[in-house]
Image: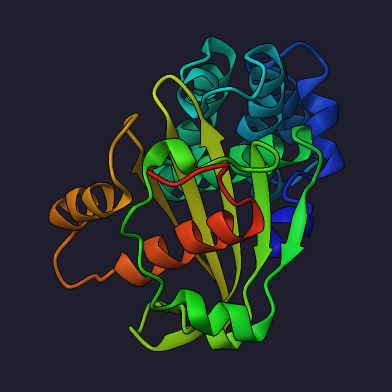
Length: 246
């Protein structure tokens, strides 16, 4: 899964950040631009990735418990402000990248758990009945779980041209109080990597059928995420069966 293996932060960004945070990095980059040490495009690239370095620190300070805690961190917000001063048009891209990178950090902190779902089970999970299961039955083996998704799962993502591609990987990260899952589905396309992050709230004691129905009602029109929710829930229930069923 590229989100878990790619290196999104160049060493230059870490070096500038180590000078004392976002403002110190900006001042040093500005000096180096004026002296001709670095080019303006490279400086802009460095500053666009400094927020990810800040996010690493924020995630550590907040214990990788909640995405919102890391994104609201003052140092991260300052780094994001600096990056957007160079790339205001990249706000949505930077925000998406930060969310996905936090999911990676939480997965790494939880032990880098990766499981492969075999083709037979993957196909069965497409039509798994959730009747009788409740949100209390769900438990990840670790707070982050990477699932290798075989083609038999039938999960797909669309590229920018709305061409559908077979998904290859799913990352699930769990938060508590409130209990929720953040899911990142990834596929490789002719354009490169495509990924989409969804949040699934799991109120205590609720039937999984009701939870899925609630999310389905709130989902954007023209997007059917029920197969993903059903498959992800079924995969976790299969890998870590509940002690009892409601």
